[in-house]
Length: 392
Image (cartoon, rainbow, N blue to C red; front, side, top):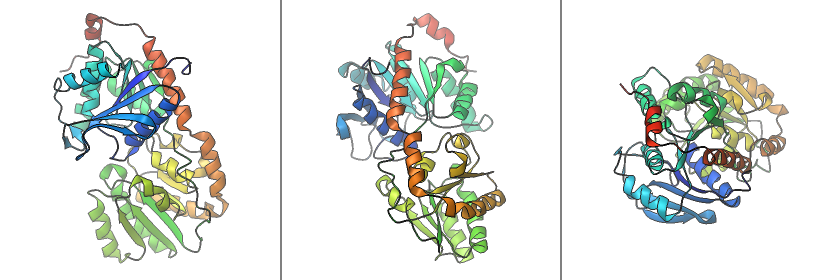
């Protein structure tokens, strides 16, 4: 179905290369595979430093770095109609047929979806995160999401947990929400030719060091694991506001020789960090999918992760040990993973990941959602307004 129709797609998000994270790599890899399927893909994001204007990336992927500066967490200032002229120019110049926005807290995404619908384009939205319902930030975000998603043609979520969360938050009919998982570039994330010696067990953490990613859990788990297992060493890649707490923990317990802090790791170097270890530790407190787990498993590492959000859906039981987001339970999970290590074959794990997760498969499934969106009936302004939620 996706092979028969050629679409011209505008991907929109505040999050894109040269910034690196789950959303950024999803947009990049999905765009590359859609180009290979014969679709035309253009990306619109805001300027990053001196990277402004039109740039071409691998495979002829055209990117508009619109000259707006981000004001908070890589987000542009919400303007409602300030983005309309540039969005309209890109849509007409590139002869776009469908607008695809990514990530709920990207203001550029919300505005482009709104302008796209106003101009009569079909729009698709992908949600990459889970949100709560009780804290002030989530309540505000959910209201914005209700307003935007009342008007999208179709929505995509990266896991079944994420779909449930999005439907509850936005009030979208469940039949309009599709589940298309993330994937991993298995050609880039290969196991080491020679497996590291098991005389010393190395546990790798690669994550942004922020509250949401469970950096505070690591502060309690690492000293306890080091106390129980004298032959365990930690390598921590990543940066963020919680880095100070981890460094304080290292000083307090005298673990400078057993906890190595690498700071921010460029995405191109993530594999070389992963293949130096045996176990990958993910301590997230909320996660819709977690591409980092896929990258680690593709490199042949056994994963220990918190049982949150969409994580239990990601890997088969023999590749991951799940724990509650509680320090004691996580220490027990690490103990169990260390006993499982002799049975792990990194190459066999990599081969299984190749079959389980493939960006080309993700692109084909996404193209089916595009076909579905483009074949849906048009609505006039009154019908569109009647679907808008009442925002108190």
